[in-house]
Image 1: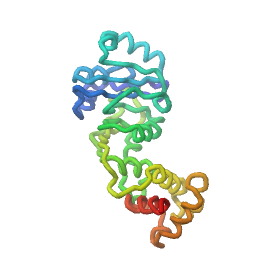
Image 2: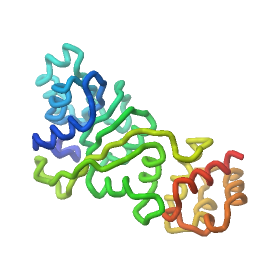
Image 3: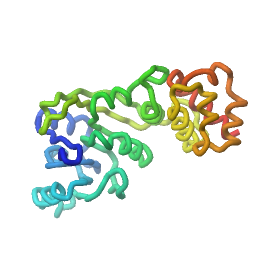
Image 4: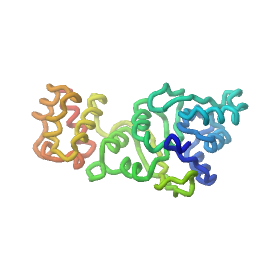
Length: 256
C-alpha cells in the first residue's frame, strides 16, 4: 500500500505470514486489493495461490510488474490497474487484502455484492469494531447489519502501527468473513438493503419516522405496508435497538 493513496505498507513479516496462512489458498484464485510492494502477494504465491491483484497507484503497479515478471508470465499473477471501488474486478474465489482505510466501507459492500467463498481483510480497528458490533447494540450500523446478515464474521488478530511503514496513527485488525445464508428469510435482498440503508440514515429517529423519511430509497406503497404491518414496539424503537430478525420482518412486509 502507498501512503499517497491512504495506504501503509505492511512490513512485519510475521504478520504477513499470519495473514497469508489464515485460510487455505493453495490452488485457489485470490483477489488482493492494494498489493503495494507485494510482500503479501509473495506470501500468497509461495503458498500456491493464483493471485489477481488490483492496484490503484500506477507507479506501484509498474514496480509489481517488474518484480513479478516471471509470475505474471506464467499466469500465476495478474495485476489490474484501477480503483477497486469501481473498476471491473478480475475473477476470484477468495479475498486476502490489506484494504485502504478510506475505501474500506465501499470495497466491503462491493465484495458482498460480488460474492466470494472466504475473505481475510485488514481494517482500521475502529472500523472492524463497528463491523463486528452485535445487532441491538449502540455501535451497530448499516455495515454491521449487512455483513452479519450474509456472513459469519470474526476477529482474527490486531496489529500495532509498528507493523507498517509509514506507521498509521491507529491499530489495525484482521477480520475473517465466511458467506452464509441469512439466519432469517429475506424475500427481496435489494429491498432489505434499502431498508437497512434508510433506517440507518436517520439512526437517532424511531423506525416509524425513519420509514416516513425514506422517500427515494423505498417506494411509498412499500412504506405504507411496513407502517401498517409492524407492531408498535418495533415502530417506536430506534434502528440500533433492532435485531437481524426485525430488519427481515420490516423488509418482508414491503413484499406483501
